[in-house]
Image (tube, rainbow, N blue to C red; front, side, top):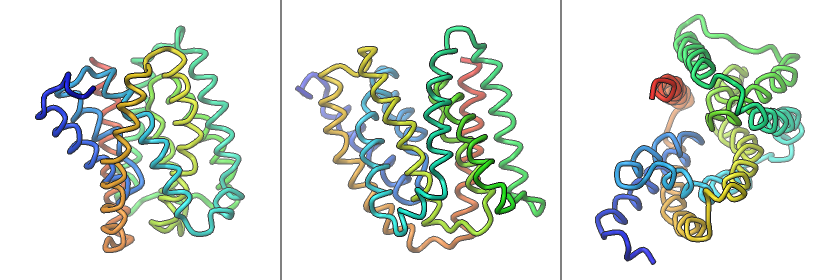
Length: 251
């Protein structure tokens, strides 16, 4: 079935998926941000997006299942999880009437500004008493923005790096748990709207292998990344996410 694409295209996509899995394993974020543009160099963009459907679900479930104290993560962040689901539903509902360009410009600029602030000595921290209420706010915003534009990550990253004392492993397990509430409905929506047809669903299933290989390699690397460097890398990812939103707004 893959014979309809040349060996170089298949090899490039395999490499792109490995890279996406690697960054996911190392940092817990960034898979579609890296993999979709790489695959879109040789495939139609909509196809590149659809192929990521199964791997992102598997990767997030895998990382959360591997995490220590998963029950504690659920107990602490379940309101955020529910807020993302509600926000996603609302975002899909208003997709036809909202000005996506304005939304992406405002949120993208705000995300970049926040990333720069968090990378400075003036970075903000959420008091413990506000972690859950803020989670509902950021989760709802993440779902709303993601439902409109597919950019679920920036608001969640913004929220999590503001929590004092959240280690790199806790960050990865928490964002994987929260991403499940976004990527599962997103995948179902792709299937219902025939963007993810049976052929692409099979390709997406095959894509899980290279993503998993990269994921395992990235997890090994994470053990050698200091907490400070991990935080700096997450801030870089956040800035790239904000820039991607601005780029998408003017396409």
